[in-house]
Image (cartoon, rainbow, N blue to C red; front, side, top):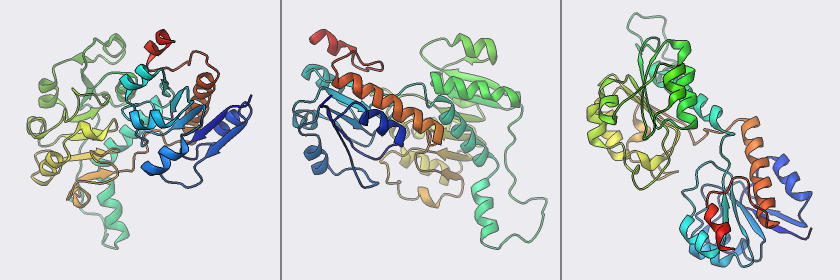
Length: 326
């Protein structure tokens, strides 16, 4: 046993209990906030492994501070907080938690789509302010969903799950992805198109791509101009995929009808003006925030970390080349 691990923020108890059963020391950040840079550098020292959050920037400085560590286990499907190349060069194993949050995140994308289409946020604020005086024929007219066109940008696990859920609304599905998705084409009658064609035709555009050099600012002023003025933009992937200044301008000028966001370009900060946009539905990065999903993520991250500290091949390793260096 004798393993010493650090968890950078409290996670569901099932994950911590899994670690405690096999580790001598399991220290957890006692405060419900992200660690400061100085705290992170201090807390990783002398650990056999570290369980991290997406908000923890794990670069060369942190890796070298983590003397004795075998690697880092991320509580997230994303891993853009890791310097993967540097970790591999240093012989450090990196892992993530794929698969378990697919449906939860797809469900949230639908919640944002519904809320933006039917102007739920505006309606909620209107009623709470005591302004509701009775039914009116022009009160908060929104957008229909049934029979409309859903555009999926990034047809991986989450994008596929969201698209398949559209079948109950008899929606036409378009998708943009480097690869053909036979499941979507067979089960949802989806058609693979170029991004510009998808933007011109879709009533709802939902983004599900990873954050890479090629996807940063994938959605900017030009892309929003190509969308229908009645279209709604949904992003539950990563904030820097959209240019937030351009999105605020598109919302302000009504170049698009609305947006539903779970992620932000400079999270947790919002671009000036975004919070005041009535046609935007904004939630605080809760894509995987269900009890069952976060519990499964915590257990998976713990299992990954235990494999790392024991020197075994981690089941969800994102830099498998590291094993060739050992």
